[in-house]
Image (tube, rainbow, N blue to C red; front, side, top):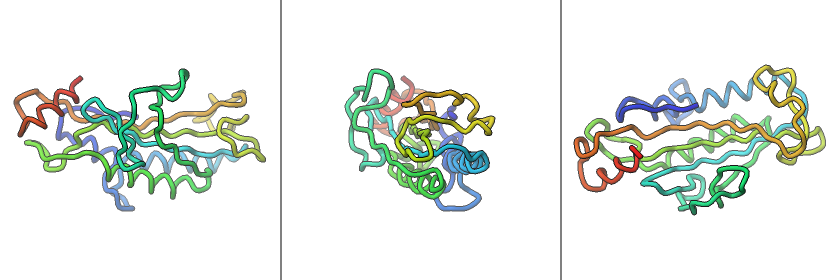
Amino acid sequence: LIVYGQTGSGKTHTMFGSLEPGPEQGLAFRAVDMLAGLLEQAGGRRLSVDFSFLEVYNDELYDLLDGSKRLPKQRSTEKHVVPMGLTRRHCEADQMQKQVHAWLREGAATRTVGKTVFNPRSSRSHGIVLLHLCWGAADDGACGATGGLSRSRLLSTTKGMGRGSETRIYLVDLAGSERAGLYAMDQEQLKEGEAINL
């Protein structure tokens, strides 16, 4: 799920909305609620959830669940494009809504923001939420174990997945595109705008 467009058009508000519990929360929170409901209805084999929150700011990578720690531009494995050292928090499926909501609020509150011509609190970075659904047998909570929830149409593609598999969901809030030199309020924002438009 990706939100993109002109700066000041409401992308971050659409994705995250209010960070306080309630009806003003954005798509990320609602998507987690919907997914948790589908998983609960489907039943089936054991499932756990891993969560990461990454920021891309001025062409650098930061871990929003570890005090905005700067990360190396290096893959954790050859198979997956995940930065080395990125925090990956874990919870069981029945705790998904409570835990993931808390982690979403934590990461979203840590993102880089600044005042622009269009927005007094503009996201100056790309935010990427990574949800890993880790399939396991009833007695195996390890991420990537055998199984799937065949009763859910949403998860029908997991049928027959072998050991070591997982389903990945990405929620991406792209910083708004800007016209270089026109809307920047200072040199730092000009630099940010150039990185955003890359």
